[in-house]
Image 1 (cartoon, helix red, strand yellow):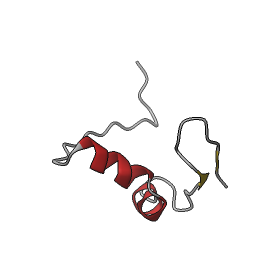
Image 2 (image 1 turned 60 degrees about the horizontal axis):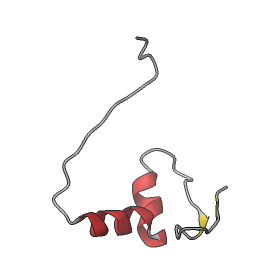
Image 3 (image 1 turned 180 degrees about the vertical axis):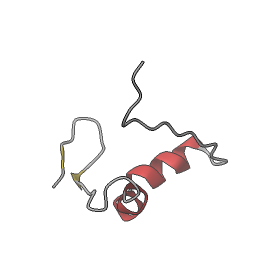
Image 4 (image 1 turned 120 degrees about the vertical axis):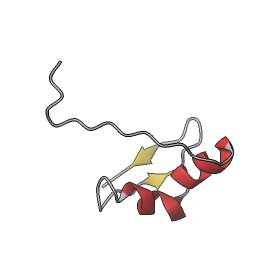
Length: 56
């Protein structure tokens, strides 16, 4: 198997699942944690079922 250019990470998070999801998907916090992967990562829209999301 060729793993060149791939990374794998894992973490244990001591928090309730709803809090983790809220932190990951809330507009106020999404850009902060996603910046570790892409500094300009952002979105417009809602994560609600049936909604549309758009990015840069």
